[in-house]
Length: 467
Image 1 (cartoon, rainbow, N blue to C red):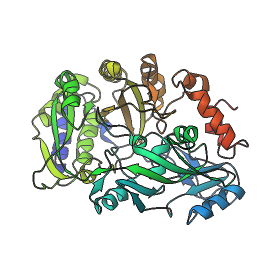
Image 2 (cartoon, rainbow, N blue to C red):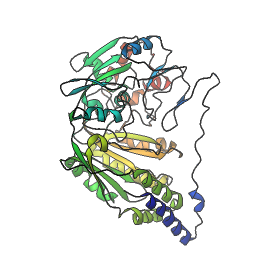
Image 3 (cartoon, one colour):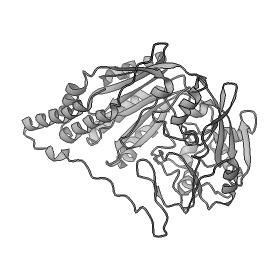
């Protein structure tokens, strides 16, 4: 969408504007230092674990990596509690940290069989590896999230999703799974067998045990046309509902302090492949950060410079198999809060969030991601009971994110938002019970499967009202 050369031009153009105004604000161009990192080894000789963004840390007493389901069952029975499964470490909440046993499913990876068009997939399989594995059979996942580094089990546990008004989150395509409980039992479940365990386990926060295997619906592997364009923010708002109705996948990014938005659509096509080209997202963020650093003192100047730099960028088009286009590389780290709102409130909430940021937080430069997700019936699915629209606010990993709790979360909560389970929020037991009709049913199944609480770290105990 914007070249690296253009990103440098952004800094130069902004600097010229500032110099012309005589403000002397160039001190803001200095980048912030890296956040302090905890010691790599603690006083007991335990190695540090950190999540992707660096805000969650732990020194687990044991690190487990079972090679098969039998070894997984044996380990769960004897492991030091709390036992917490971990995938890519991409969750921003404290789901994984433990002083007990950190368990990786990386060795339980791959497609191991087929039942018609349904794939049997080991739960440690990374989403990025699942795409080409399914494509070998001419099949594909119906949808993918923005990032594909997560393990399948981790994505299901947190209700990870893509976008598309007719497309469910990933757990919506799960037709069966195998759950290994903390006492080593293996439970096969589906909508027809052990149905309550199935409805609880499809989105479980890793609190019931460890999923070892998933039966997954697939679709024919088709080429998809991806289009990316920049337009005025108000145009994006006015056309969003029509675009969700029109396109297989549609999302857009509201870009604070620019008056602009970035639209992204995906539609099936029989056209020949057309290369996506080099990643431009990092350069786009560099340009936005440069504008923030140089013009953060003046929103009007910042918006004028952004429009001059970005508004005329040419649309980007690519055609390829869906698994190659639906997800994006994200090398620039960030922290994130995402809530899922009733669809009819989503765009009004977005406007309020943008206005709040532009009034209170000139340090923010990351775009705000806006998606739509179809309904499903998993008990802890944020999309249970009706379609939801997601609004995700990001901050650079070097920047303060406390304002997300103070300014942004109250907006989401006032409009009935449900938090993404892997992203920053403060909600706990009774607040969540008010949002999830089957909350108490989930807690009952959890207590039956793990009566000793071996899967519960302090964060989950607080979430479930057990402290």
